[in-house]
Length: 154
Image 1 (tube, rainbow, N blue to C red):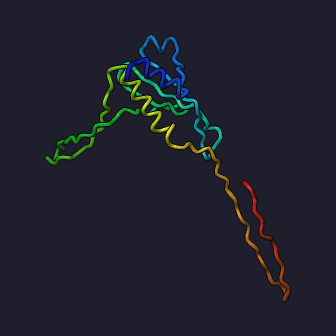
Image 2 (cartoon, one colour):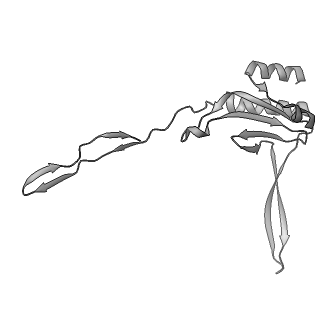
Image 3 (cartoon, one colour):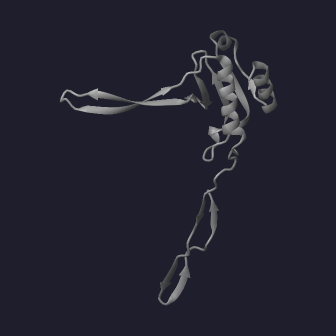
């Protein structure tokens, strides 16, 4: 894809660039998706979805105050020799960097489409309901109900 095709695709999807001047000088580009992430459990965790492309070759997703690398991963095994002479296997994970800016932007758009435009985003809030049980007590042959069955919203 050419740069104009990528930018036209972003425009059609409603993705807007939010890069600051300082970030642009450093080779970083940030893009905000038109939808927001809504937490099922706590309304304080509702935030914008931001995808970033870095000059170093990384592509990241910003979630609230954390950034997650979304580059593809290459795994490999490494062996360490202990002082006892035994070997231990360690699995290492290396990110595959994308050196070309157009390739990073294309990867970013494909990631956004695959993860946010195809899959439905849950916008429901879980409501917990507690049902009180009937507690019946018999005193001197008379039956007394202490609580009736109700539904409480928490």
